[in-house]
Each structure stands twice: as C-alpha cells, then as structure tokens.
Image (cartoon, rainbow, N blue to C red; front, top):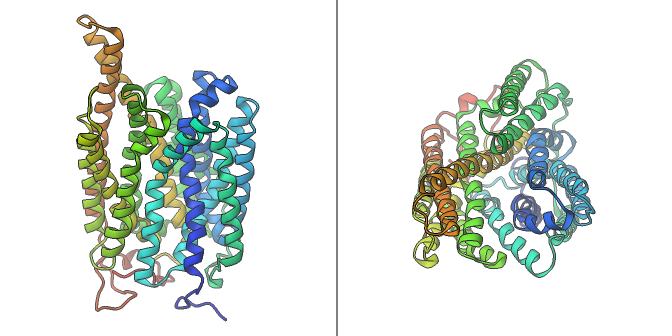
Length: 508
C-alpha cells in the first residue's frame, strides 16, 4: 500500500525496540570503556600519554563524521544505513576486544566511531519518520530520550561489572549481541516511508570541510587538556576549526544540494535545541568522569559499586523522560519542559558542589543524582522530538545528525574543558596548602576533591545557561484545538522554505 504521512505502520512499536537497542549500544560506548581503560592500559602496555586516544579516537571519528552519516541516511535509505552501521559496529567491537596492541585497540575505536556516525542519525531519523501521531511520538521519544540521556551512566555500571568479573575485553564484545539482535530485528520489522528518501547528489566539499572542521574542534579541546589552552598546537587547531567551519557555511549557502541545508539550523527552535543540548552534555559528561574517580579513589568504591551508585541518576532520567516529559509534551510548550529540566539538573549539580572527603552518599550524593536525572530526562525528551520537528522527511537524517553532533562535540568539549579546570584547581590547592599539611596523602585527596568541586561549579553555570537558551530561543506553541497533529507554530513557519511542508509529527 502506498505510504503517506498519515499511514501508520502497525509494527512501529516493535521497530522502536530495535532502534532503542542500537541507540543504547552507541551511547554505552561513549562511557563503558572509561572504567575498563586502566585494565586495558596495563594489559597492552599503553603509555599515559597515549591512553586518552582510546577515548579520543572514538569521539573524533564519531563527532567528525556525523553530518556525513546523516546525509548518507537521507540519500541511501535509513534502514539500509542503520543495518550497515550495526554490522560495521559489531565488526569493529570484535577487533577491539581481540586487540593485541595499542595500535589495534585505537584503530578499532576509530572504526567504531565511523560506524556509530552512520548508525546514530539513522536511528533517530527512523524514529522521526515512523511515529507521526502526536501522543505516540511523545511516548516513543520519551523512551528514546531516556536511553540517550541514561545510556552513559548505564555504560559506567556495565563497564564496572564486566571489568571486575570478566575482563576489559568484554566491554567491546558486549556490543556484538546488541548489534546482531538490533540488525536482525531491523531487517524484519522496520519499514521506511517511501517518500522520505532524498535523491540529490552528495555534497563532497561539504563533507570534507565539515569533517575536518569538527575533528579540529574536538582535537583542539583534547590538546588543550594535555598541552594547555595557549599552547601553539591548541591555538592552531582552534583557528583551523573556525576557518574550516566558516568556509563550510559559505559553501553550504552556495551549492545546489548541501550536506547541511542551512534551513535546518536557521530555524530558531532547532538552533535553540542544538545549543542547549550541547551545553547540557558539556556539563554532564565531565561530571561522569569526576564522580567516577571521586567514588573510586576518594570513597574507595569498587568499579561495580561505583556503577551502581549511578543507578538513581538513571532511574531519575527514565522517570523524567517517560513520566514527566512524555505526559506533558503534548500539553505544554517545549521550553516550559526544557528550561525547568535543565534548571533542576543544575540544582542537582549545585548539591554535588558540597562533596568532601567524608561525604555521605545517602545524605548528599543520592539527592544530587536524583535531581540531575529527573531534570535531564525531562529536558532531553522534548529536545529529541523537537529537533526533527517541521523538517522535510528528506532532511530528517541530517537534522538527527545535528542532535548527535551537538551531543558528541559537547561530550568531548565537556571532558576536556572541565578536566583542565579541575587539574589547575587541584594543583593550585596543593601548592597553597603544602606548608601546613600533616599528611601528603591527605593533602592529595583534599586537593583532588577541591579540583572536582571547582569544575562542578562551572558545570552548574553551563547547565543554567542551557536553561536560559532553551527558554529564550525555543518558542513553538502549545497544542491547539485538540487536534492530534498540530498546526500552528509561533515563529517556526517563517524558517521553513516555500517548498517545505511540515511533517505532521508533533502537537504544539
């Protein structure tokens, strides 16, 4: 039967299971290796200087190629891109698990990033074209948003369990069953609407400029962490990123079939989503890293206990996303979910600025985690849905890729930025308190905690800024007249080109 925007796929909820499973695998991989890294480093003899490449190789390939992956999904077909990404990710994970030396491990991580960049935008855009009725879309994006937000923390738990009870190699091998199940399910149940394919040619100059620009940006932040912000390589990379990305914007405004049609980001609502989501992830990802070290080194938790300590944050995210975000999304303006969500998460972080050497987990860390999870879950959910709202089906892949790009680039920037802040605060504290210190070991721990709390204060500010941006820029309206798929938007229509008809995807 012919597909139309009003056609409803009877197997859409089964399709959601496999799309969500693939998304979980990609998000897990951003953090699961963090906990396994010390064991892998020892096993393969990786130097301290090179160990960051196990994380960075993945972030660079993934962040740099996401826009390309999103456009490939639009041109080649989302289902085909999705399955190809899954199979490639499984192969790359098998290579990582079997790595005999550091070069093989880093190569496998880069390959995971390449296939992740195909897979992630295809997953989100499949969701956008599969769920077109407002309430169902809210529920589907609630589940997807919970996974996108909570997957990083799940990665910390799973990484701890696998490293402690099996071996670091299982943090790679665990992806293979995920990928096989998701690919098999996708082939059997996912249907892609026929008219959503984009038939234009691939914009090769755009691909080269965007990839090199994003890689320079992410690598610049990584070098800032190791070499300092004013070092020549760091400044050179930032300058290159600015030049490449400005040239990219210029090229995109001129070519006939751009990699990133500027209409996708010119819309103030989508611009608000990408900016606020990127900032929120900067705050979140740095925090995961600090709190992992804080719980293991300062509090003496095992990898498994550390992972379990993050569980309340995941519970908060799932609750915020599926119970608050999904239930209210068709009733209130998106900014009235996103801005308060980011603010509640900032309050959770504010609680965590009070951590000390003898901080009680139930009295302080637990409420901080719960508030952060609830806030992030509530904010992520409408963000995920709104990011692909009102785009033509032929641009759904690249609009989805922009969400993933803001998250990936935000994660890489957050880790580098907050780590640099924490390291300099730790050094400054140790230097100024060295004279009166009774014990060097105690001073070391106190300095470390001071560094973490300084960085968490910055994260509070970054999250508060995300809330302000969401409230200021996102101005789509509430649902009108009880119609399930809505119509009027204040301000968004102006950003749509004359040839664009908003897909009936979400109530306003």
